Image (cartoon, rainbow over all chains, first blue to last red; front, side, top):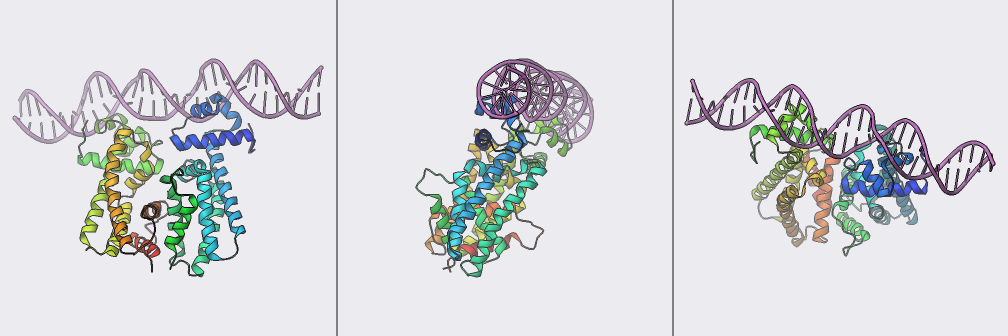
Length: 190
Length: 190
DNA sequence: TATTTACACTAGCGCTTGCTTGGTTACTTA
DNA sequence: TAAGTAACCAAGCAAGCGCTAGTGTAAATA
């Protein structure tokens, strides 16, 4: 078994697992289904992952790491203007969400299936990501771009953004950037 | 077995099932766990419900029916002012969401576990509820209380509201009405 | 060349799952 | 008082579950 490595093979298996977890849900996805999708037998799966839990953790870790680095890059690319940063953050959020949709759907809706250890470890990653948001929103409030309670405002924004995975159709006329811009327009004081 | 009835006993069992489904998730909730929570043996469960699926459907139906009638009542109580209607609808949404939290969490996050027949039946109920929202939002747009694409705006609002079940703590200082008012304030043009 | 490593296989163990069966008990109604 | 019915129970079946043990083999390493 590969301890905590990130071989290309394991990455590919993780990607396939994410897809199945979205289709069927974590609990209904059996190790036999996973193995078949990967083109191997169920026993062989445990050469790559210690147990089924570890596959879930790998999927979520992958997605959250990506989100974090994309958001950081997006924020660095724009100057200190609060409005630009708000736009950039919303765009980055939706960009990751749909570039890596399967992993994020799993992270959003199967988080509770993680065992306590994995959950604790991944919580730090998620907190680091949310800290970026808090920062951006605080600046927007200070600049009076938006109004309201900082806690509530950030929850509402993240809720609206995360919920998009339930209805957004990438083959439709709108791009993720369109969504981001429309949301920011909706909440900005005019 | 009781076919499609709503005996008090069955209603109570449905309530208990909703609680367990939230705690454990539908798939991880076994009929033995359900039975124990209800104070009966697992076999007896199937006197009240045809199968496990039917319990899930009962939970979701109960919650959605409540949401529909509360929203209708709230809208009838206020006059035709678009702003009042928007407030009323947001308040009604959160009122049901937390009065009947378990059922709604199940409806929001376990919907996909429904078999196709139950899903089709319950979709009509849900559509009826969402139609109320579309109506209210159209009026608000026409009155220029809010701006933007009607489709996107309604999705964002429902997303922000539904996501509250993931973070709202009823024992905290804020009431559901506070949340509703703050959200409406956030999206209203000033 | 000898040894290790990575990756896959077959076979199946021990357990849990949703659900069924056949029967009992307590209450209501004719 | 007899019949009917709603609610329950004990026992267990067949299928499916996660995971393990032991083995084979080709490529990389010493």
